[in-house]
Length: 292
Image 1 (cartoon, rainbow, N blue to C red):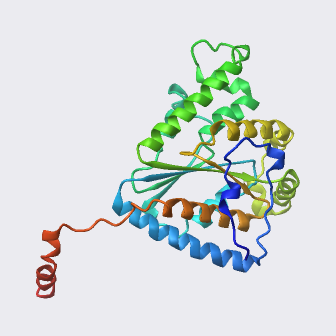
Image 2 (tube, helix red, strand yellow; image 1 turned 135 degrees about the horizontal axis):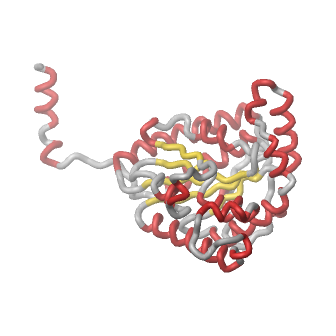
Image 3 (cartoon, rainbow, N blue to C red; image 1 turned 90 degrees about the vertical axis):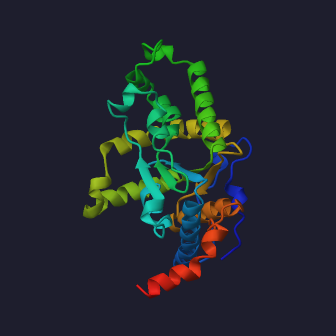
């Protein structure tokens, strides 16, 4: 397998989405890629146990993608070796009536990770500058003062919303949450193949919705808004990584390696030690247990 420069997937300057790759040759067999993933996720799991004991950093993993890009299976495979207490998965669907009674960031705020834990956002707060831009009438459900019709939603509204999201992430980061954002970049042709497979396989039919085809017709619109998201919100404290996702095994490995590389850079994450006075009593505690 080729050495991978993980920094090439990080968005650090303005990009054009058409230039971002949807495939990345690892020059390795599927079996070898899966073996490398197992090794990487074991290290991640061990490191998360240390983070849990350390208790100072939470990790927020954000996943965005077009339908069929493989978010669910990626979560399953990348976090398979985590202690179940160490990771929470949140899948954000259409806001509920209760959620709509709060500001749009509230449901994401309450799902942030505890110190020592991971939270995975399967679809994220960026849906609020993505789906709501493609379908602007959704904003009216938020009952925002001064927004009575779609005509009231202008460019200044979206600029303010980006500012709010960036401020939200900055505040979260400054208070001990490591933020890593991934876009699984699937090609339109590969999505077509995966949608056809859903229709061809009876055990996959349940995943299909006619709405998938309606959203597919809006592909270029979505891509334009994704490009704007990357260019306005990839920050040093909350970077975006564009992951080539036409091959699911490759995408999973890249995400796992980026996560591991990011967390290993925090050299202050160490297991806490017992106070000296307790350490000195360990032989006595062992004797008490052995004589019990």
